Image 1 (spheres, one colour):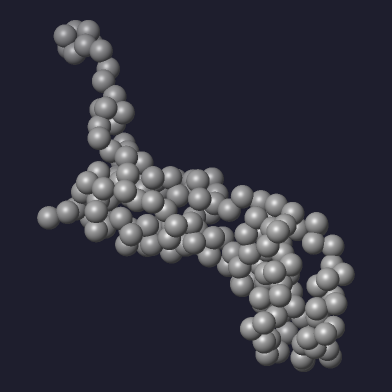
Image 2 (cartoon, rainbow, N blue to C red):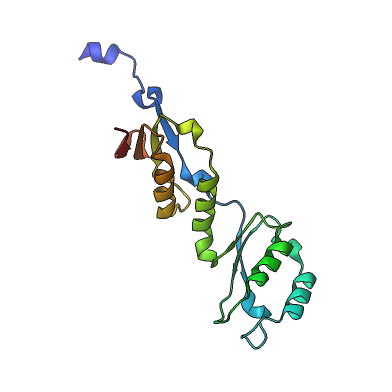
Length: 172
């Protein structure tokens, strides 16, 4: 027993070749704010182009600086495609990001967009652990998408923490 106690502790996890991917780092920066087109509708039914253009032009877009804009319409109305394009034109210089969705869906869309844009070459041929614990909500779709994107090149993919993982995929 004394011989075991005399040996220095070795952190096998730290010395392993595992690469940890923390999806929490992809959480959108900035507040997520709603932009409901309902308030721009005539009689909550239709969008008049001239009135809409004037309203967007008069809007103080500075209030959205550095924020994430979730554009949607809470009324049961048909919104022409150009309306979303006009909102994007005005909002883009101010917002961190913009998406067509309810505010609750924004996080998922942001994750999927960031995963799609990731350069995964650093993970080729590596043993990967997709971190499981986080302080911010990571949607299940993010785990699904990162696995789909990594699978063709990773040596293996695991879920959890380096000290306790669940095997998900192993290259044959």
